[in-house]
Image (cartoon, rainbow, N blue to C red; front, top):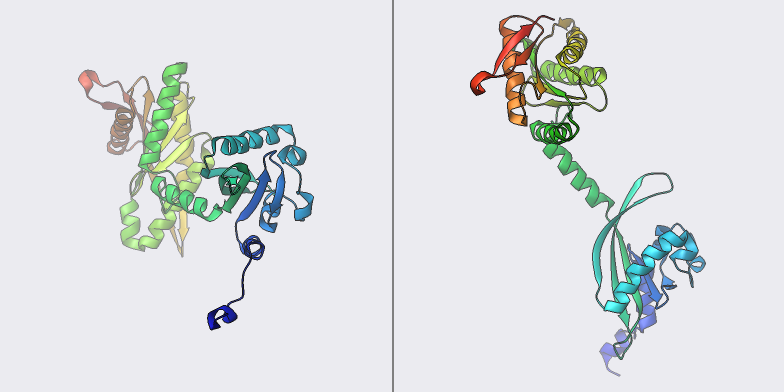
Length: 317
């Protein structure tokens, strides 16, 4: 025996396997051809909701969780073993005992003997909650305004398109309200951007508190908001909602020792009376908003556009 052999003890397969099972942050398990657990590590036992590994040996998912869960798991396991093809990185969502979501990535491999015959299954379960949280955060940032946490123009357009599809199918009416916060630039110039940010957050809060949970409010510009009201019967109902929003938003906001006055101009367009696509509905509501600004009225309702051109007719708040 040379010096290298003396310095390095021999590691048998069982020692290495036990070290892997004990120290791996992933859940690891082995099953036989009948889909019964023959070995697994403590992480996998905890993943299945058990404290003791011994409680799972010799059992399958049907024994542990009932026929419905067991049948689905067995079909997946048998497909891997009978096809000889692994099943890699399948993402699944589960619910913990406390009701919180839990995401895992599951890989399954056919387990072969020395002659190459499939004798069972190796499974590896990796928690990917942090990855899913990062994905969710990235998606939120891409679809929401960072200051108010309201949907942005991109998400608003998508929701209008969905609303259009339902309205065409069900022959219903919905409204788009375009809101402009008058005097906002003066607030920024006189009191600073911190005051302006507080105003925008408070306006967003007041609008959300006024409309239904099923409605959408989005911030699409510096001081511009859009509200999507589904299930509105006519422009009279839309005008009533606009008036409620105006009364809520136009309450002064305290800033240090000052009271910041707020005024809204609101434009209203309805599907299908004023437009039949998302872009045209937004344009019609925006044109009506400018009409409200010019006439110093709380809101204005768009009228059908002759020869493809939008105009607005005012309705005093």
